[in-house]
Length: 344
Image (tube, rainbow, N blue to C red; front, top):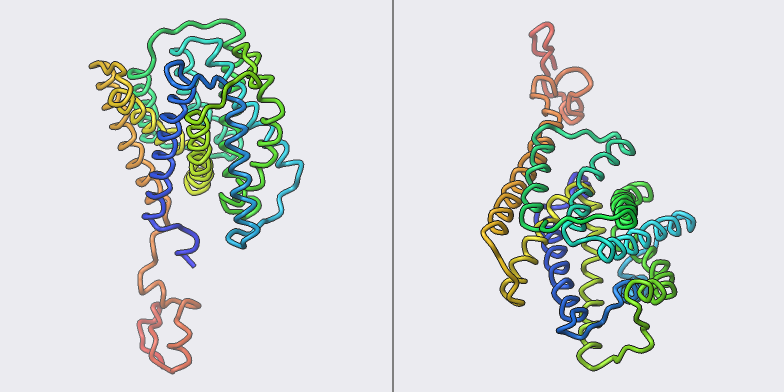
Protein backbone atom coordinates (compact mmCIF):
# COMPACT_ATOMS: atom_id res chain seq x y z
CA UNK A 1 0.00 0.00 0.00
CA UNK A 2 2.82 2.38 0.83
CA UNK A 3 4.35 1.86 -2.60
CA UNK A 4 1.06 2.91 -4.17
CA UNK A 5 0.80 6.08 -2.13
CA UNK A 6 4.28 7.34 -2.85
CA UNK A 7 5.81 7.02 -6.32
CA UNK A 8 9.37 5.64 -6.44
CA UNK A 9 12.23 8.12 -6.51
CA UNK A 10 13.25 7.08 -10.02
CA UNK A 11 9.83 8.10 -11.35
CA UNK A 12 10.12 11.46 -9.59
CA UNK A 13 13.48 12.12 -11.21
CA UNK A 14 12.07 10.99 -14.54
CA UNK A 15 9.15 13.41 -14.24
CA UNK A 16 11.49 16.34 -13.54
CA UNK A 17 13.84 15.28 -16.34
CA UNK A 18 10.95 15.05 -18.80
CA UNK A 19 9.76 18.53 -17.85
CA UNK A 20 13.19 20.14 -18.08
CA UNK A 21 14.14 18.46 -21.38
CA UNK A 22 10.78 19.08 -23.07
CA UNK A 23 10.53 22.68 -21.80
CA UNK A 24 14.04 23.58 -22.91
CA UNK A 25 13.49 21.77 -26.22
CA UNK A 26 10.27 23.62 -26.96
CA UNK A 27 11.90 26.97 -26.18
CA UNK A 28 14.71 26.20 -28.62
CA UNK A 29 12.25 25.04 -31.30
CA UNK A 30 10.03 28.11 -30.81
CA UNK A 31 13.05 30.40 -30.95
CA UNK A 32 13.90 29.05 -34.39
CA UNK A 33 10.25 29.13 -35.46
CA UNK A 34 9.34 32.60 -34.20
CA UNK A 35 12.53 34.63 -34.50
CA UNK A 36 13.03 37.00 -37.42
CA UNK A 37 16.19 35.11 -38.35
CA UNK A 38 14.18 31.87 -38.42
CA UNK A 39 10.67 31.44 -39.83
CA UNK A 40 9.09 34.57 -38.27
CA UNK A 41 5.95 32.75 -37.05
CA UNK A 42 4.79 35.55 -34.73
CA UNK A 43 1.58 33.90 -33.55
CA UNK A 44 2.34 32.68 -30.02
CA UNK A 45 -1.25 32.35 -28.78
CA UNK A 46 -2.37 30.45 -31.89
CA UNK A 47 0.68 28.19 -31.58
CA UNK A 48 -0.39 27.38 -28.01
CA UNK A 49 -3.79 26.43 -29.45
CA UNK A 50 -1.99 24.03 -31.81
CA UNK A 51 -0.14 22.59 -28.80
CA UNK A 52 -3.34 21.81 -26.91
CA UNK A 53 -5.00 20.44 -30.05
CA UNK A 54 -2.26 17.83 -30.45
CA UNK A 55 -2.32 17.15 -26.69
CA UNK A 56 -6.10 16.64 -26.80
CA UNK A 57 -5.70 14.26 -29.76
CA UNK A 58 -3.10 12.20 -27.89
CA UNK A 59 -5.40 12.08 -24.85
CA UNK A 60 -8.36 10.94 -26.98
CA UNK A 61 -6.28 8.16 -28.57
CA UNK A 62 -5.05 7.08 -25.13
CA UNK A 63 -8.61 6.85 -23.78
CA UNK A 64 -9.89 5.12 -26.92
CA UNK A 65 -7.19 2.43 -26.77
CA UNK A 66 -7.68 1.87 -23.05
CA UNK A 67 -4.23 3.10 -22.08
CA UNK A 68 -5.81 5.64 -19.73
CA UNK A 69 -9.20 5.74 -18.00
CA UNK A 70 -11.42 8.80 -18.18
CA UNK A 71 -12.73 9.90 -14.78
CA UNK A 72 -15.55 12.31 -14.07
CA UNK A 73 -14.74 15.95 -13.42
CA UNK A 74 -17.62 18.47 -13.46
CA UNK A 75 -17.75 20.38 -16.73
CA UNK A 76 -18.06 23.75 -15.01
CA UNK A 77 -14.77 23.16 -13.17
CA UNK A 78 -13.02 22.21 -16.41
CA UNK A 79 -14.36 25.36 -18.11
CA UNK A 80 -13.31 27.50 -15.12
CA UNK A 81 -9.83 25.99 -15.12
CA UNK A 82 -9.48 26.49 -18.89
CA UNK A 83 -10.53 30.12 -18.54
CA UNK A 84 -7.86 30.69 -15.89
CA UNK A 85 -5.20 28.86 -17.94
CA UNK A 86 -6.01 30.74 -21.15
CA UNK A 87 -5.98 34.06 -19.28
CA UNK A 88 -2.55 33.11 -17.98
CA UNK A 89 -1.26 32.45 -21.51
CA UNK A 90 -2.76 35.65 -22.94
CA UNK A 91 -1.55 37.70 -19.96
CA UNK A 92 2.01 36.41 -20.36
CA UNK A 93 2.04 37.26 -24.05
CA UNK A 94 0.67 40.76 -23.40
CA UNK A 95 3.12 41.27 -20.54
CA UNK A 96 6.04 40.36 -22.80
CA UNK A 97 4.76 42.73 -25.49
CA UNK A 98 4.02 45.72 -23.24
CA UNK A 99 6.90 45.47 -20.75
CA UNK A 100 10.66 45.35 -21.01
CA UNK A 101 12.35 41.95 -20.87
CA UNK A 102 13.71 42.80 -17.42
CA UNK A 103 10.30 43.50 -15.92
CA UNK A 104 8.88 40.41 -17.65
CA UNK A 105 11.54 38.29 -15.91
CA UNK A 106 10.78 39.94 -12.57
CA UNK A 107 7.08 39.15 -12.99
CA UNK A 108 7.95 35.50 -13.64
CA UNK A 109 10.13 35.43 -10.53
CA UNK A 110 7.29 36.89 -8.48
CA UNK A 111 5.28 33.71 -9.10
CA UNK A 112 7.30 31.92 -6.40
CA UNK A 113 6.16 34.12 -3.47
CA UNK A 114 2.67 34.41 -4.99
CA UNK A 115 2.33 30.61 -5.18
CA UNK A 116 3.59 30.30 -1.59
CA UNK A 117 1.07 32.91 -0.41
CA UNK A 118 -1.82 31.31 -2.30
CA UNK A 119 -0.99 27.83 -1.00
CA UNK A 120 -0.91 29.26 2.52
CA UNK A 121 -4.30 30.97 2.04
CA UNK A 122 -6.07 28.22 0.08
CA UNK A 123 -4.46 25.06 1.47
CA UNK A 124 -3.17 26.25 4.88
CA UNK A 125 0.34 25.20 3.91
CA UNK A 126 3.22 26.40 6.06
CA UNK A 127 6.90 26.74 5.15
CA UNK A 128 9.98 26.41 7.33
CA UNK A 129 12.63 29.11 7.53
CA UNK A 130 15.04 26.89 5.55
CA UNK A 131 12.57 26.52 2.68
CA UNK A 132 11.83 30.26 2.58
CA UNK A 133 15.56 31.07 2.62
CA UNK A 134 16.19 28.66 -0.27
CA UNK A 135 13.35 30.22 -2.29
CA UNK A 136 14.89 33.67 -1.78
CA UNK A 137 18.31 32.40 -2.92
CA UNK A 138 16.85 30.82 -6.08
CA UNK A 139 14.89 33.97 -6.95
CA UNK A 140 17.97 36.14 -6.36
CA UNK A 141 20.18 33.92 -8.52
CA UNK A 142 17.74 33.78 -11.43
CA UNK A 143 17.15 37.52 -11.11
CA UNK A 144 20.88 38.25 -11.33
CA UNK A 145 21.37 36.16 -14.47
CA UNK A 146 18.19 37.19 -16.33
CA UNK A 147 17.04 40.68 -15.30
CA UNK A 148 18.60 43.50 -17.30
CA UNK A 149 16.66 46.64 -18.15
CA UNK A 150 13.54 47.28 -16.09
CA UNK A 151 10.84 49.51 -17.56
CA UNK A 152 7.19 49.43 -16.55
CA UNK A 153 3.98 51.14 -17.63
CA UNK A 154 0.41 50.99 -16.29
CA UNK A 155 -1.03 48.63 -18.94
CA UNK A 156 1.98 46.35 -18.81
CA UNK A 157 1.89 46.24 -15.02
CA UNK A 158 -1.80 45.23 -15.00
CA UNK A 159 -1.19 42.51 -17.60
CA UNK A 160 1.77 41.18 -15.60
CA UNK A 161 -0.30 41.06 -12.38
CA UNK A 162 -3.13 39.19 -14.14
CA UNK A 163 -0.65 36.75 -15.72
CA UNK A 164 1.14 36.02 -12.42
CA UNK A 165 -2.10 35.56 -10.50
CA UNK A 166 -3.72 33.28 -13.10
CA UNK A 167 -0.56 31.21 -13.66
CA UNK A 168 -0.13 30.66 -9.92
CA UNK A 169 -3.81 29.77 -9.49
CA UNK A 170 -3.66 27.39 -12.44
CA UNK A 171 -0.70 25.48 -11.02
CA UNK A 172 -2.27 25.19 -7.57
CA UNK A 173 -5.58 24.04 -9.11
CA UNK A 174 -3.84 21.23 -11.02
CA UNK A 175 -2.70 19.65 -7.75
CA UNK A 176 -6.05 20.30 -6.05
CA UNK A 177 -8.04 18.66 -8.86
CA UNK A 178 -5.84 15.56 -8.84
CA UNK A 179 -6.38 15.09 -5.11
CA UNK A 180 -10.06 16.08 -5.11
CA UNK A 181 -11.12 13.76 -7.92
CA UNK A 182 -8.40 11.11 -7.48
CA UNK A 183 -7.42 11.58 -11.11
CA UNK A 184 -4.04 11.05 -12.73
CA UNK A 185 -2.06 13.83 -14.35
CA UNK A 186 -2.52 12.62 -17.92
CA UNK A 187 -6.23 11.94 -17.41
CA UNK A 188 -6.75 15.48 -16.10
CA UNK A 189 -4.75 16.93 -18.97
CA UNK A 190 -6.80 14.98 -21.53
CA UNK A 191 -9.97 16.57 -20.08
CA UNK A 192 -8.75 20.17 -19.98
CA UNK A 193 -6.79 20.16 -23.26
CA UNK A 194 -9.81 20.02 -25.66
CA UNK A 195 -11.49 23.03 -24.04
CA UNK A 196 -8.27 25.04 -24.12
CA UNK A 197 -7.57 23.96 -27.70
CA UNK A 198 -10.98 25.04 -29.02
CA UNK A 199 -10.94 28.40 -27.25
CA UNK A 200 -7.33 29.23 -28.22
CA UNK A 201 -7.78 28.20 -31.85
CA UNK A 202 -10.81 30.51 -32.09
CA UNK A 203 -9.45 33.48 -30.12
CA UNK A 204 -5.72 33.04 -30.77
CA UNK A 205 -5.54 34.63 -34.25
CA UNK A 206 -7.39 37.73 -32.99
CA UNK A 207 -5.12 38.05 -29.94
CA UNK A 208 -2.01 37.62 -32.10
CA UNK A 209 -3.28 40.21 -34.58
CA UNK A 210 -3.68 42.65 -31.68
CA UNK A 211 -0.18 41.84 -30.44
CA UNK A 212 1.78 42.17 -33.69
CA UNK A 213 -0.64 43.46 -36.35
CA UNK A 214 -0.09 40.41 -38.56
CA UNK A 215 -2.77 38.03 -39.85
CA UNK A 216 -2.31 34.27 -39.69
CA UNK A 217 -4.04 33.99 -43.11
CA UNK A 218 -1.16 35.90 -44.74
CA UNK A 219 1.58 33.68 -43.31
CA UNK A 220 3.50 31.45 -45.71
CA UNK A 221 3.60 27.94 -44.23
CA UNK A 222 6.84 26.66 -45.72
CA UNK A 223 8.13 23.13 -45.23
CA UNK A 224 10.62 24.25 -42.58
CA UNK A 225 8.02 26.26 -40.66
CA UNK A 226 5.59 23.33 -40.74
CA UNK A 227 8.30 20.98 -39.44
CA UNK A 228 9.11 23.23 -36.48
CA UNK A 229 5.39 23.72 -35.72
CA UNK A 230 4.96 19.93 -35.57
CA UNK A 231 8.13 19.59 -33.48
CA UNK A 232 6.90 22.29 -31.10
CA UNK A 233 3.51 20.56 -30.78
CA UNK A 234 5.14 17.17 -30.11
CA UNK A 235 7.36 18.62 -27.39
CA UNK A 236 4.34 20.45 -25.94
CA UNK A 237 2.61 17.11 -25.27
CA UNK A 238 5.51 16.00 -23.06
CA UNK A 239 5.84 19.49 -21.54
CA UNK A 240 2.16 19.70 -20.58
CA UNK A 241 2.05 16.11 -19.34
CA UNK A 242 5.19 16.48 -17.21
CA UNK A 243 3.91 19.78 -15.76
CA UNK A 244 0.71 18.10 -14.51
CA UNK A 245 2.76 15.11 -13.36
CA UNK A 246 5.27 17.19 -11.37
CA UNK A 247 2.67 19.41 -9.69
CA UNK A 248 0.56 16.37 -8.82
CA UNK A 249 3.51 14.61 -7.19
CA UNK A 250 5.18 17.55 -5.54
CA UNK A 251 3.66 21.02 -5.22
CA UNK A 252 3.23 24.21 -7.20
CA UNK A 253 5.98 25.82 -5.12
CA UNK A 254 8.48 23.04 -5.85
CA UNK A 255 7.55 23.20 -9.52
CA UNK A 256 8.28 26.93 -9.60
CA UNK A 257 11.55 26.73 -7.65
CA UNK A 258 13.15 23.71 -9.33
CA UNK A 259 11.60 24.75 -12.64
CA UNK A 260 14.06 27.65 -12.81
CA UNK A 261 16.64 25.03 -13.74
CA UNK A 262 15.07 25.40 -17.19
CA UNK A 263 16.05 29.08 -17.22
CA UNK A 264 19.66 28.14 -16.53
CA UNK A 265 19.60 25.49 -19.28
CA UNK A 266 18.07 27.94 -21.77
CA UNK A 267 20.82 30.51 -21.07
CA UNK A 268 23.54 27.90 -21.56
CA UNK A 269 22.01 26.45 -24.75
CA UNK A 270 21.37 29.95 -26.09
CA UNK A 271 25.06 30.66 -25.63
CA UNK A 272 26.06 27.38 -27.35
CA UNK A 273 23.52 27.30 -30.21
CA UNK A 274 22.61 30.93 -30.87
CA UNK A 275 25.79 32.80 -29.84
CA UNK A 276 23.96 34.62 -27.04
CA UNK A 277 26.13 36.62 -24.67
CA UNK A 278 27.11 34.89 -21.42
CA UNK A 279 28.73 37.27 -18.95
CA UNK A 280 30.32 36.79 -15.54
CA UNK A 281 27.09 38.20 -14.07
CA UNK A 282 25.08 35.47 -15.81
CA UNK A 283 27.44 32.75 -14.57
CA UNK A 284 27.40 34.00 -10.97
CA UNK A 285 23.61 34.21 -11.04
CA UNK A 286 23.29 30.68 -12.41
CA UNK A 287 25.61 29.29 -9.74
CA UNK A 288 23.62 31.05 -7.02
CA UNK A 289 20.35 29.74 -8.46
CA UNK A 290 21.63 26.16 -8.63
CA UNK A 291 22.91 26.41 -5.05
CA UNK A 292 19.47 27.63 -3.97
CA UNK A 293 17.78 24.70 -5.74
CA UNK A 294 20.06 22.23 -3.96
CA UNK A 295 19.34 23.88 -0.60
CA UNK A 296 15.61 23.91 -1.37
CA UNK A 297 15.59 20.18 -2.18
CA UNK A 298 17.49 19.45 1.04
CA UNK A 299 15.15 21.65 3.10
CA UNK A 300 12.02 20.00 1.67
CA UNK A 301 13.39 16.51 2.39
CA UNK A 302 14.32 17.58 5.94
CA UNK A 303 10.78 18.93 6.37
CA UNK A 304 9.29 15.63 5.19
CA UNK A 305 11.46 13.62 7.58
CA UNK A 306 10.55 15.90 10.48
CA UNK A 307 6.86 15.42 9.71
CA UNK A 308 7.13 11.63 9.45
CA UNK A 309 5.92 9.93 12.68
CA UNK A 310 8.56 7.94 14.52
CA UNK A 311 7.78 4.17 14.50
CA UNK A 312 6.96 2.72 17.91
CA UNK A 313 9.44 0.30 19.47
CA UNK A 314 8.81 -3.39 19.93
CA UNK A 315 7.73 -3.06 23.57
CA UNK A 316 5.06 -0.59 22.50
CA UNK A 317 3.94 -2.91 19.72
CA UNK A 318 3.42 -5.70 22.27
CA UNK A 319 1.26 -3.56 24.54
CA UNK A 320 -2.50 -4.20 24.67
CA UNK A 321 -4.27 -4.42 21.36
CA UNK A 322 -1.06 -4.25 19.35
CA UNK A 323 -0.05 -7.81 20.18
CA UNK A 324 0.25 -9.69 16.85
CA UNK A 325 -2.80 -11.84 16.15
CA UNK A 326 -0.58 -14.78 15.17
CA UNK A 327 1.04 -14.76 18.61
CA UNK A 328 -2.34 -14.81 20.36
CA UNK A 329 -3.75 -17.59 18.23
CA UNK A 330 -0.72 -19.84 18.47
CA UNK A 331 -0.57 -19.47 22.24
CA UNK A 332 2.95 -18.03 22.26
CA UNK A 333 3.91 -16.25 25.48
CA UNK A 334 3.43 -12.50 25.64
CA UNK A 335 4.79 -9.88 27.99
CA UNK A 336 2.65 -7.93 30.46
CA UNK A 337 4.70 -4.73 30.72
CA UNK A 338 2.89 -3.51 33.85
CA UNK A 339 3.45 -6.68 35.90
CA UNK A 340 6.71 -7.83 34.24
CA UNK A 341 5.48 -11.43 34.02
CA UNK A 342 5.39 -13.97 31.22
CA UNK A 343 1.90 -15.14 30.24
CA UNK A 344 0.77 -17.91 27.92
